[in-house]
Length: 231
Image 1: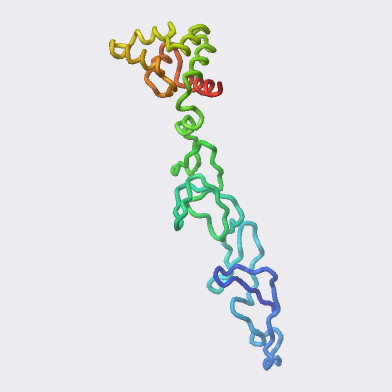
Image 2 (image 1 turned 120 degrees about the vertical axis):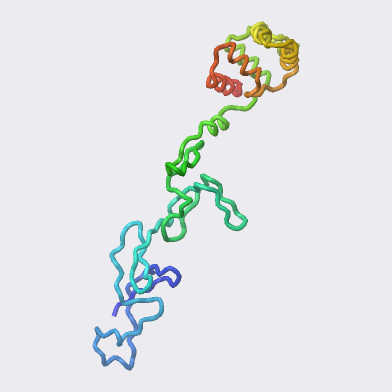
């Protein structure tokens, strides 16, 4: 008589089946088809399993064969932060499935993009514009890069760029922007900031003022900072 053995914990069918059941010596007088003639060990059954299907494991559970989802070996990605003991898995982190059963609710087989966040309502990854901007647009550039960038864009002349680098002098186009500031104190502060700056922050109010004076959009300024960062 053929028998099929399975893993005790999960009921999963083991490889190498079917096996031959051991005959009970004092019952060999019984017909070959009589199950009483054979010794079926623990974690085995004489019930034949179903035909295998892709993506499923055959498991003997509660006296019957059941097909259980099997994603082992597949790569999945966390959709929420998970803490397992002292280890924290972050959103978007890659993992490989090692156990049979349905995928957990906090993973997906879809790979996220470099600037994606998980949208639980849409059950999909969605590109986050703020995250992309933070990752691709420098938050600051050096004054040297700014001066070369302004010179390249013909906002200031070559001689103005050199003089500004040497002495902190304010080029005419920049001074015109400063002159439009509402108070004398703000104009003085702008001039001092220009003369003493070593780095230029992307979100500094003076950057916004200069951008507005030159008709530059937020995207234009982002592109300008990206270009300057390469100088």
